[in-house]
Image 1 (cartoon, rainbow, N blue to C red):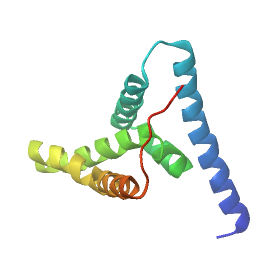
Image 2 (image 1 turned 90 degrees about the horizontal axis):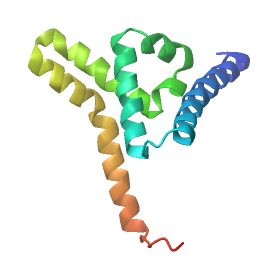
Image 3 (image 1 turned 180 degrees about the horizontal axis):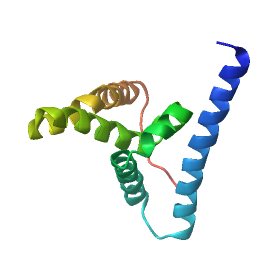
Length: 125
């Protein structure tokens, strides 16, 4: 792979990921939605865009710029469910769970390790 191709791959990922985060920041600034509701909104948006066939081309274009934000987690769940649905309803549920299991497991393990290493403190304003 040529260096220029790698550079443009990074630029595309940064631009798309930055655009997704910019939209999230605009939602934060101009609505009264809590961060949890925004998180769910973007995850469900990833699911809807995947179901409509719009998220896959974005992933192919931007790579990690589309899969790393929380909307990418929705894409992952929907993709796994659609693949599993070929085996029936039970496959749709287990397909979504198995597609996301590695990322969720890593988050749990690394969170536990960080909790062992560092001590939490109460934030004083």
